[in-house]
Amino acid sequence: MVKYRNRLPQLAGGPILTDGGLETTLVFHNGIDLPFFAAFDLLKDEAGTETLRDYYRLHANIALQAGTGFILESPTWRASPDWGTKLGYSPNALDAANRVAIRLMHELRDELESERSPMVISGCIGPRGDGYDPGRVMNAEEAADYHAPQIRIYAEESADLITAITMTNIPEATGVARAAAAAGMPVAISFTVETDGRLPTGDSLKDAIAAVDAATDNAPIYYMINCAHPDHFAGALDGGWTKRLGGIRANASRCSHAELDEATELDAGNPQELGRLYAGLYARFPHLAVLGGCCGTDHRHIEEIVRAMKVAA
Image (cartoon, rainbow, N blue to C red):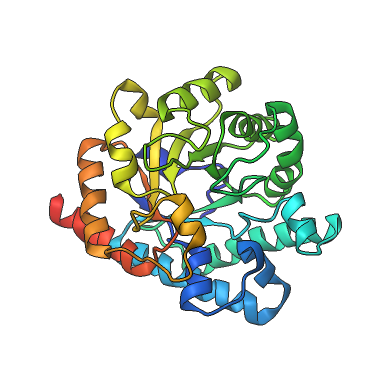
């Protein structure tokens, strides 16, 4: 099978699919106790690894049936030092888990990829703090130092790119972009926003993207938005800067981050409605390439995104 080492078909235009809300699917649909939402912890035994294989196969098969590419986003959103320590991982054990995660993505690509559906391996980087609350904001240098070891492992394991998901603030996004550039890795930065379309720090998407671009010599290959309902950010998308947006991984729920944080039941929203909203965004911004879901979404939402876009085409 052809390898796509640093070949990124999403840059040639989309759509290219990715998965839904991995962690919420594992917790609420699979009934798995997932401390700190750390999906990578399942890699410690074969049963957990097979659960992850099944999850990725389910989503990748949607892309195969649709004849689109697929991004295999590694289950490593929480596989950084602070979270690893909370989970009882030594630095060496955490490094090993990150390597195993990328190797699993290679295994799945070898199994599933087709000529019509190229598959891209993305090393997923999550925020140092909570995905809904930036907490103490690092400066860019601290952020680069913090995330560099994880990024280096992904480069060594031949991931195709780095994707920083649920970035809550400008300095951390800048640090990730710098660390990825230093490792020779393409990087995509995905910001999350509150119900007002602004980052948790209050910055606008426009200003956040401009600031990271200015501080990194336009290092990110594109930006994304994740972990927010389309209604929360669609009104903020206006102007030439939106050309820097390359993907959406939205929630199906209209709940705020605070409401989601306190929820004891899953709000999966309406898959059909989410599909229609994606079709509307794609009609406005046909350069969007990467389409997937975030908290509360699963394979049903990805199927409806594909269906709605085919109807709109």
